[in-house]
Image (cartoon, rainbow, N blue to C red; front, top):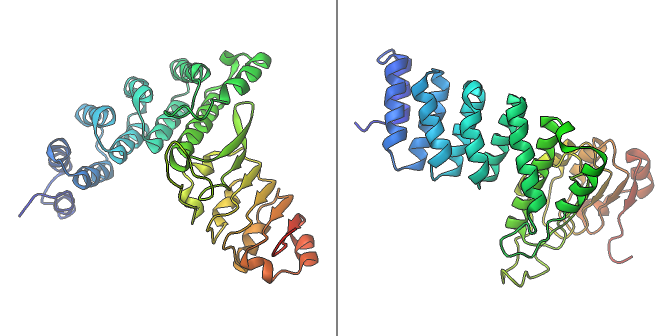
Amino acid sequence: MALTPLKIYQDLKNNSLDKKNAAELLITLIENSEKDDVRLESVQLLEKIDIKDDKIFKMLENLLISDSNGIVRTLAANYIKKSFIEYAIAPIKWAIQYESDYNCILTIIETLIKIDNEESKSILVNEIKKIRKTKYMDKDKQYKNNFRKSLKELFKTKKIKTFSCKELAEILINYKTIEALIKKFYTLYFKLENGLVIALDLSDLGWNVNVWKQKYADRIKSISDIIGLMNLKYLKSLDLSNNRIESVEDLINLKNLTHLYLSNNKINIENLDFFEKMLNLKFLDIHRNPIADKLNIQEIRKKLNVKIKKNLLFE
């Protein structure tokens, strides 16, 4: 019978293997298998076994730095953050310079926040300085790096070295998130304040052809399709018009949202409860949605305490 991660774990649970031998077998699979799913499952089960030794750390360090699969690298980064934080700085310092996977980058930044010392702060400062030197946010050089101007203004009022690890990390997360969104959607607009995204417009997807890519961006069907949206914690205005969204439940987590534009989607009346939970919402555009057919405009304005736009055809 072929050796599999699950078989190793079952043998451990059945007391046919002890923790040390189970860990050794899982490490062997991780280091020798060319199958992504085998390596992924092996890392997950190794973390479950919860052995902390030098050999496991070295293996995780190698995965983070050199594995070809972004999910494997992210798992390794998470494992290091959780179980080997005292040794994390060296691999994290290397990985942050070269990592391309968005989720792995986020985990690396979160690890630096958790370390929270002068060395981790220095790494974040250097990454922010790189942003200030970067002219474009995409490889086609079509999106000018607006973060440069915003950061220049910010650091006129407060020196970069006086920022905390968490504050620097928030700026870096916002930058990396917009970078990832540009890569995925091609056509978007955003506004910054103090190096943080306060407005995001994804309303032109599927309407405008990006002439450099020569194809349409797919319209958004679910909020979860918008990579990193929940990491834009300072977002006040969000325009998702002209998409195919049916539920806005996830947007409850954007606590600072005041203006929400959802015209020409597939939002139904069941979303009303979600809108009620957006406590800072002041303006809502839901025209050309199924929900607009069933609303009594005056009652909804009173219930949600927002200005609401619901015209079904034209203004």
